[in-house]
Length: 535
Image (tube, rainbow, N blue to C red; front, side):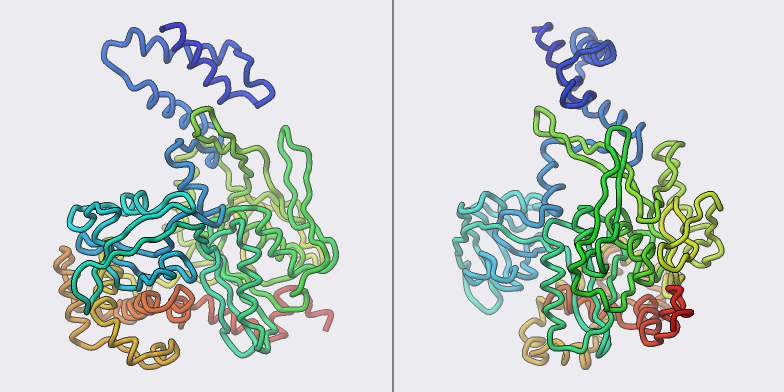
């Protein structure tokens, strides 16, 4: 038995540490790790969870390499990969848990739940006859019960406002899309807006679907919002960049110790090569977001507005281990068309790497552009107009927008931290759904006319106080406009979709206002791209 443990552990570690072609070679280092685990299993004074120790060792090994090589346990692989694959298998609802009850926020359009008649505001009280209300069920517990292979069935018991008793619905599970595009609408008569939350397998098609909303407009300009977009699939970013570049132009290339230079170019068949382009970026824009932004900046093709991006320029590949777990190992660096690597330094380890990132919020960088310093050794010139740009530590935008902290108070931070905005709007929309739908049959009516009453605000404050948040009149008034805007946007999201949420929350946004201003002034747009001398 002991011999089996030793051989299994050593073989497992060999698969982990060596390339696939050499996975069976058991060298001295792999034997040392396997032997250590075997000694613990056989002789350690107390019982030890060798599986947990193995996973911890893997995590520590990968952390010592770079910040983005990671280990994913077998139980977490599907959950982590689903958003990038662009779909999962289930019943197709957005839900939340309020007062220990599962409330449907929205059935996904054309999904299995909508087809059988489930509605926003319905409460799920049983799943396959199992009680799920008032048992302190978690979000993951609900997902586990509702998700399952396409074609299988699940029975849910529903309580619906205004109707007696529990109604039973049998739903056949299907593939459910996970959207990477949050919003697509017109900001002005000539300027469209598209918001991506990630880059996934479905992003290119979602982009084209979003453009269809502009079909009967006078679209000349496009604003692509990449704020807080952590990236995803590199090829999805390349596909979007392709739509804006004429001819076969380099979008990105990658290379590593075992990976020869591999280039990705546009096809010359882009449909938006004449549109003026602005990309909104911030410290949450990373990876594939930086690939798209970097290509547009390097080719002097679009104006970047916002703040310095995250700085993730490492490429990971996924390798499955024998138990179904996965290692995402950094195999290469990617470079923008000018040859810039925008990866932030990580030679001092993961903790220092993250510490340097969070320092941006305390050293003035999010408030003042001149707080950001790039060494001359990382200076590059754009490919058309020879503008000065830098590598290392993210992309510096062409137009800086400071973080707006004018409304941030302790009261505001606390209601965000404790989820009061979401919980209040869930109850509010649920309680007033029929009234709101009757009074505002179309979104534009809601956007232009809806306002919370004093009674509503009093209930909001009481909700915060019930959660242990001390009310402060001065702080509330400082944050009032922002709180009301977010509350209204969340109600809109509850009644309609995320597109309507952004149509409200983007009002007065300094990024959006700057983008509209730049696109409205042709001379300024061209000057920022270095094209003024061509006019």
